[in-house]
Length: 543
Ligand code: ATP
Image (cartoon, rainbow, N blue to C red; front, side, top):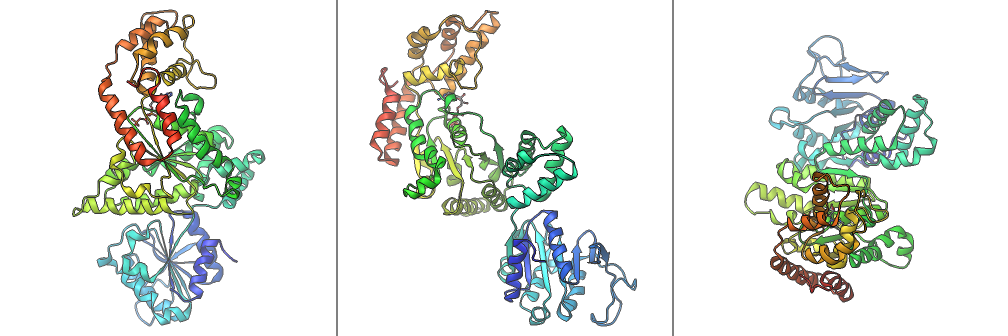
């Protein structure tokens, strides 16, 4: 029996005598069974589990508790003789197996450990001793530690002496096999859907996959793709750090911003749609983009639309949670999250307020150290050439951004988002009134043709408004019409809604100057800047 790739990788290391102690990083119970199946084929397998104590696996892979023998050398010991008590504690278990590992070839699997109280258990000392013990090496014994987080169990000195193998949650072929086998068991015909199911469940481990499939089956009697995507997002969300969404907005939902749209189409969308052709022309694949500008100017909306234009999943990396909720274990959270992102990629990864990463690292306090560790982990990941995700970071304060983000290969393009000019405002209002073909906003009943009032009065009256404010303006007009029991939304309702806003135009004009100055620092694409300026300033001379 060859075993899956991750076991083979371990075997190779073991055969080269690098170390007889191997740590598999996984939390998937299915992987544990795969390992035990593999080891049982080869010979004697001992297992330590904090709940069940020390035991051995019998021919049927069942756990049989080992009783401590009262006397005699380990060689003479016979297990399960009933001579002594069961070996429950890790420390006793390690002592008990120590001589066995050196005397005959056995595999010891240590599972389900969630914390390491070294002073009580001696786990690290035992592993370090075995890792370099010639007797253990020559008998061919091996010790396998299976845990989702090696770093929290083993100190750096121990980690240096053992083999650490991160185990993939699942490979495409494994998910395909699981899906087909389970469908067969449940007598479902999913032949036409297998490929989409395999794609939609990337990033899940085999245990999660099975539970998601079963839950979908109990909900609707089949493996419904939409249900499965929802269940997967719920699972991923439990990590507290990631959110997966199927992007719903497209460029049709975005009014105006033609210069930005065409920039994104040219440099990102078109390249991602034909990556092979782009490669053959030596056109680089986009890896990251920064959207910066004042609040409510459509940065998140553009990120969603970008994901749907290239037909990729949209992953939201909730940086706020990484820092606030799990201080002390953020490094581990971050690493797991990034690994999961890699598994689900290619995808668009959205990082709102990416400047949070850069500004918290205060030297001297432990929170600051933790933050800078997470930050460097993140930067290292951003710079990895094999990363297949496209990062969309946003910020309102680009000046706070760490220089390191802006280096090549991380956030390649920096696009300013400013307050919309008259033409763009008209388009945004039309989107939110449901007047644009293909946009998602439903059209309310409208009184007559509102085009004229929009062009003549609403657009001039809203200079300096953000897209979010224009959307809110339409919502207010709808509400006014509804409250008045009007038959439809009319010009008066829109005009009344305009009057409910208070916008400091002078302040906004200053903000635009600041962001434009920043844009000039970031890019030397003069044509893009000109187009952007035209769209922003338009006829009413800016603000
Ligand atoms: P923040 O910096 O506060 O996160 P943001 O720039 O990401 O803001 P969004 O969240 O994308 O802004 O915009 C908020 C809402 O404003 C959108 O959901 C949308 O309804 C509306 N909006 C903004 N810009 C546009 C636009 N160009 N076309 C249509 N709607 C827009």
